[in-house]
Length: 148
Ligand code: HEC
Ligand code: HEC
Image (tube, rainbow, N blue to C red; front, side, top):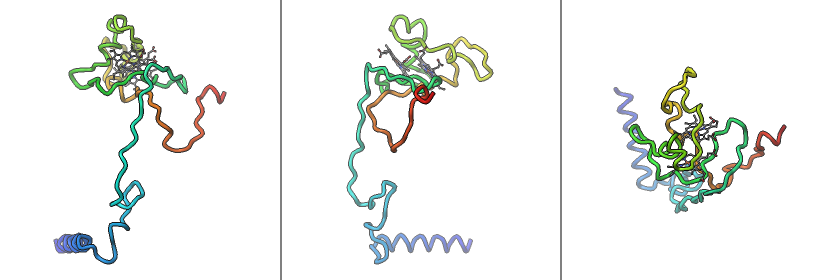
């Protein structure tokens, strides 16, 4: 109990110290996660354009194909999965959209189900829209086929 009171007192002291711009720590000295002082005005993050209609090749055999259209308007929750409205048979034929593969119907024991299995229900967990984003860090990644 005593140590708790001490901790609160120390925290309060620190907060007051900072609030009054104490000599030891000023806002310029405090660096945020982005590496700049916390009071530096922030730039709005860059937005990326979805590469609609372009088909980027897969970089390795097991890769979930990238989505060649925007997906932000399609709802996925317990009751609704709007991706299925185009990608599940028979809608896939009507919408001329690629049919989700049979692997999406296997449960975790490999048993085939009649509906998309829960482990592949949240489509955007694996399939993301193609965007014109630059790599976050410099890297030497090469598609698997090129390395062979
Ligand atoms: C209105 C119909 C429609 C909806 C809804 C839709 N798609 Fe598509 N999707 C298509 C069509 C059509 C294509 C074929 C490529 C094209 O012309 O854009 C496609 C292509 C794809 C592909 C590429 C498949 C391949 O073999 O390369 C993926 C992956 C995909 N969609 C995922 C999704 C996901 C995930 C959602 C939900 C967030 C979704 N789609 C919602 C119509 C739709
Ligand atoms: C756990 C990851 C995962 C999830 C979740 C997932 N997929 Fe896939 N998907 C894959 C992989 C991997 C492939 C490529 C291999 C295969 O066919 O399974 C694929 C392939 C596809 C294809 C291309 C099929 C073809 O024959 O070209 C479509 C379309 C697709 N998925 C749509 C969806 C939709 C719609 C959902 C949501 C209902 C979904 N996926 C959920 C991993 C996933």
